[in-house]
Image (tube, rainbow, N blue to C red):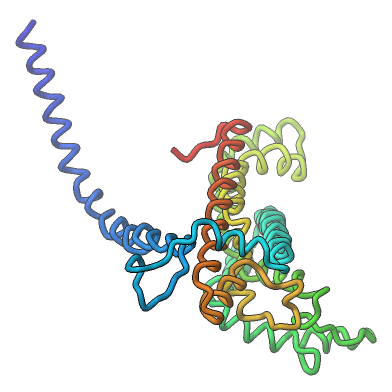
Length: 314
């Protein structure tokens, strides 16, 4: 009896050692990524101390800097335009989140109904292409096609007698132009993600629904959408974490002082304060507050998703 127990224990230890040796290369493959995260994500966190200093670059990060407590944060909240900037950030970010959920899901459901494979793949490639372009390139394209003098959009509107619209120069149009252009750039990628989720649905569910007399619309409502809900929740949770990230690259390349009232967001304000006006302390305080709020939002949304849908990453 004891000999059999020893043999089982010896066999279990051998299996464990074999498993460790087999998985060792996989763990080693994680090292470059972990090193990059430490270098570019954790070590720069030391710089948040600037938010509590009267920072002078020539004195170094800690050498002889004057600590000011919460003065920089109080200075930021006393700025006359801070709440307008916060509102612009939330307004643009929330509209992007809603549009980037609704448009790709709708397009994926429609594209899933297409039975012509060549048309389906060609459409996916065309709508996916803008995702690979930077906002520097897309910004130039947007400026050209939205030009009020010779842009293709205003030329088309002119055929119906509509006066030229300054999409990038009027406060009433600028936020919506940012949302529409962001959807144009990213909805191809999100559509492919949702199509991948649709392909993972068990085909027997559609067959059972058809036997019960369900048409395409009822199959979509009762089979496809419930089958996609986990990936929808995942993308929604991730997007809620960046609700204060309205898109620095996009707005920085497309805005101008004429649309600061409706287009200036937290990130562009931090850029101007930190790099153009050399207000290092207040700009770092704004960035720190933004990170704290984003952390709270993504944690809360993750907990809500777990409570309501039993969804969890770990």
